[in-house]
Image (cartoon, rainbow, N blue to C red):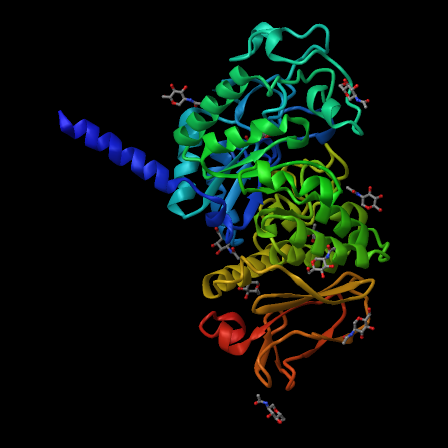
Length: 488
Ligand SMILES: *[C@@H]1O[C@H](CO)[C@@H](O)[C@H](O)[C@H]1NC(C)=O
Ligand SMILES: *[C@@H]1O[C@H](CO)[C@@H](O)[C@H](O)[C@H]1NC(C)=O
Ligand SMILES: *[C@@H]1O[C@H](CO)[C@@H](O)[C@H](O)[C@H]1NC(C)=O
Ligand SMILES: *[C@@H]1O[C@H](CO)[C@@H](O)[C@H](O)[C@H]1NC(C)=O
Ligand SMILES: *[C@@H]1O[C@H](CO)[C@@H](O)[C@H](O)[C@H]1NC(C)=O
Ligand SMILES: *[C@@H]1O[C@H](CO)[C@@H](O)[C@H](O)[C@H]1NC(C)=O
Ligand SMILES: *[C@@H]1O[C@H](CO)[C@@H](O)[C@H](O)[C@H]1NC(C)=O
Ligand SMILES: *[C@@H]1O[C@H](CO)[C@@H](O)[C@H](O)[C@H]1NC(C)=O
Ligand SMILES: *[C@@H]1O[C@H](CO)[C@@H](O)[C@H](O)[C@H]1NC(C)=O
Ligand SMILES: *[C@@H]1O[C@H](CO)[C@@H](O)[C@H](O)[C@H]1NC(C)=O
């Protein structure tokens, strides 16, 4: 009689202790996967995929599982996958759902998803799943939407009447429709909040999910977010594409201390370093301070420089050193790094849907783990992971900008000082001093990217050799002892 009860209690206990809080995500590094475009179960490397057609190309959860080694070898310890719910036929990206309780069969079965989750956890990797609470998808535009096809919201009364969004009006952004085929859910109604919360808690439990990425948060009633994140019991990462720090960062409060996909930082980074504008480093530096000043904790935001909704860096700037520096920025700056699939293969797709290329069709052979950027990404993750494990303060530390110019930025992050250069491989060599860097006076310092040894002066500053598109990452020699980096 008592055994089953005790067993249930134990299970409940285990489930609770495995729920991954924002704190447990601090040291994670995320690889973003667009499920349909990452890997096929049959591993057919010539199967066509025309991004302009908005059709399924055949990527699956099994495909991801079979390629986990490729991701793991790059040093990632978490993945974010596309929404998993059943979609209308053009919903290859997962954002046009029709039924919360049915899986997208193009991506696989319930067992496949559980297998993927297990395979990740065996490697101590986390699973982040994308969810959509703002809208459902419809083949027909308003007013011809067939609401009876939806589950559990199988009636028009669960949705707002159609209206076009006026983005200068927050109410309009929340209650109007993103497009005329995306019925907007009434997330201000308690019965809808309850239904979504039930679904979210089951989803997280059924597939042992460690974190949620929540789509279009700025288009959803703010008050619904705390109950959703509460139901999830795991780290919530909200997406809101907006360049205004004052508008964006306060959303951290309704995400129960999780974070946002850091668009304000992305926009200023893009303007500063990718578009050869090189005129707004000051704005980037300023935004770094806004980020740390206005967030509950800027280290809970997801830092990125590419994703499936925006043009890739190589689309505008083909320079390999710029690509490498952008990856270094993503992985080393404040926040939880997110590298989008294909960034490590220097893919160059343009605006959505251009940046949704099939990985198996990549230029120099699919899943090439010998490519320069795969190697760079792996090494940067190795540097970050070592630092996370050996300096308690690292993932709490808020970046300090030491100096910047139009093409360079020097940053202190805890035990690390890094200098990034965005003028391209042809850039002349020069020197850069880590003013106010604060290494121990006269200590041995190593640039672990170029394996160059320096000695700090009596003020703890180092004058580093930079240029030619170099990345410089300096740490004291005593800190990296045993890491095998540069033979230490
Ligand atoms: C891979 O897909 C292509 C295009 O659909 C097809 O022609 C080819 O036969 C497939 N290869 C294998 C080994 O199945
Ligand atoms: C590349 O993949 C091969 C085969 O899985 C593996 O043996 C090798 O260690 C990998 N190399 C890197 C740098 O990840
Ligand atoms: C904002 O949008 C809502 C919903 O469409 C509308 O009712 C309201 O009048 C708008 N407010 C302003 C100031 O335009
Ligand atoms: C979770 O699993 C239970 C038991 O199999 C099932 O009844 C429920 O529908 C599942 N919920 C979700 C969201 O997958
Ligand atoms: C990046 O910056 C350029 C130059 O300001 C701008 O034209 C472009 O729209 C920006 N891209 C994004 C995604 O913001
Ligand atoms: C951030 O806070 C620091 C210290 O309080 C202050 O000096 C700085 O001006 C602030 N920066 C911004 C952009 O708010
Ligand atoms: C493909 O390989 C060529 C020759 O090695 C190289 O020049 C090019 O940069 C590579 N392209 C990518 C996307 O890595
Ligand atoms: C990067 O490539 C070099 C040279 O092939 C290799 O020695 C090193 O182990 C690679 N680094 C990582 C982190 O894969
Ligand atoms: C700081 O950056 C400026 C360019 O903005 C540069 O001229 C100066 O040399 C740098 N200072 C040091 C100490 O490196
Ligand atoms: C650092 O070196 C300078 C010059 O050799 C010396 O004067 C100073 O005492 C040293 N500082 C420390 C803290 O060892």
